[in-house]
Image (cartoon, rainbow over all chains, first blue to last red; front, side):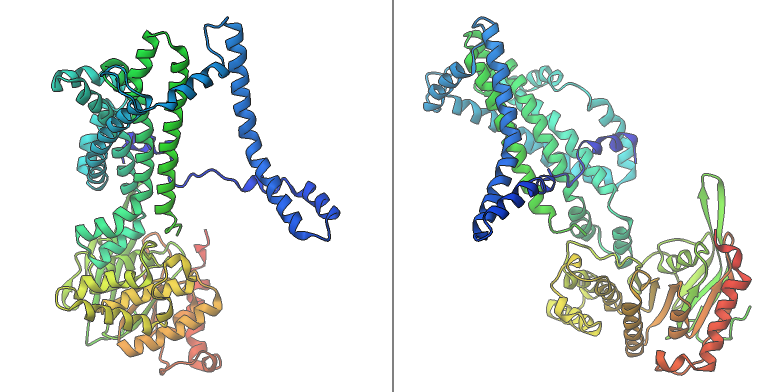
Length: 308
Length: 269
């Protein structure tokens, strides 16, 4: 195993899920009090218990959001209206999202179109990266020679800032859109190659011994042992990749222009519409969050079967 | 060497030695291992931890290659793992994403897939699962069944390939005493029914005496070798309850215990 590949998994071992168990016990004290008062109606006790638990779960994140909005409001106030406050931004957002899919020429389109355009680029770039990165990771993880051969290349290219690839893309494709997709591709491919390779190389020796004793064909080893054993690692790679891709798209689109959330941010900056920039930040954050949650759901669905 | 004269030489380990390259230089795990096993014979390998008994088993399985010497099975030198030697692993090594049925099917398909129809292959799996008493759990995943059941699936998988030799690496080591006793009894029935040749690694003296035709006792490593072989001359079928008072049984047990705890005591490191 090369050192390059080893360093990378720490970022997200499969199976890390947010734990909710620790909050469950907190309500005990108050719930006991509640049950003393309503001994005759156990039904209501249970209901108030779940209600309490729901409040306890929801309270910290709500307080966090309130804190964020509070700090933002104070900053807006002290900046002397250069930074729009939460309320002003909210009104602007309501207006913006009331007509998300309008088109007034190529440079003035609804926020919905911009988000979709960005998602499309990410989808294509990420899809290509997955189509090449996962099989490549398999080969690198399975064949020691290939691992030794590609490890230096990967360690050389992986730390390069994604945007440094943009000029190459523009040069080769001679158009902005494929160049942006290229940047997504090149930045999303590394986590998938590396996680897949690590996953393959960490398949328990026991399973490989089974493969040897049964004398399984390389195809059977691939489909019956390596793929299922590596799946959690692959899903982690995909999750990291899509995070990176969504991070990079905003920057890439600022440079390439056209339609897309990144370009939109830059356009609104040129219009000095700061409310819209703040809205864009929230939109980017929320879409990124949704992508991540979607992949966590998929990962859970696939990995629940083998906790071994 | 107390090796008895054999006429069959079905499995023969000939002057085998095994060295590993470690950070502190070469480490000789085994040397001068000579052993011949008849067809249908049940052999136990017993010895203290680290004496290389699992290494020897893995060499017969073809998962490790001897540094010197050769292992011959049914007149052919062993040059790698293969389905003619079924292995029951210590930790069962079932694939957790496949059902018990599919775990066994994977093995059956590999060995008989070229010559038999799907229905025949499935019938084989059903039959072997029935043999180990797991028909009801066939479509469960390994994490849904008990340790003893998993080990049975492992045995079923090994048997399903109709191997020339059944190799078992402490097959019941991880099980509680009651489950272990039940599986030992079942194993005796199965081995009688299939006429399998068995090589089993064990830590358990009673298990070795109960199951084996011969018990191969290994000296302590490094450079471990065969110290003594005890022939267990007890008629089959064997009944563990009746054996307790059997003088032959007691004598075999005493021989093994003396070897392990008097002659090879310095082990416990």
